[in-house]
Image 1 (cartoon, one colour):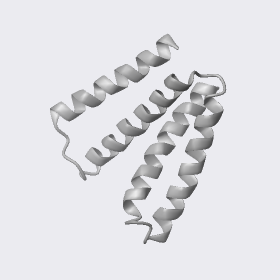
Image 2 (cartoon, helix red, strand yellow):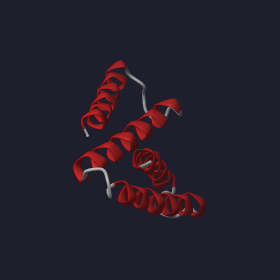
Image 3 (cartoon, rainbow, N blue to C red):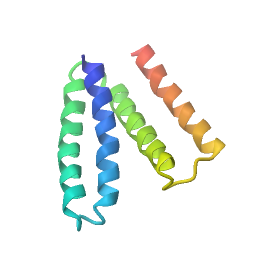
Image 4 (tube, helix red, strand yellow):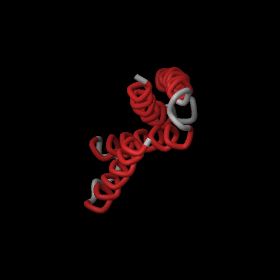
Length: 104
């Protein structure tokens, strides 16, 4: 269950990162509200997961999921270019995160 919470928290990290960008310096109300809610929920989930998952592993997985999801979303929405090198590097990051799950 803690791994599920950690994965959802990592996805929420991507939500707050995207909302932060769209808030344009907290000048847009809706993205700012989404940012705040997703940030609190993401951090709370990370804290719960860290009760049973080692801190280094939990944090690395949380950041990895958030980074890959955020970068993937940017490529899907064409805010950033989807290059072969970028996709391969994200795949390596996913493999590293999965490896942490296996050894934890």
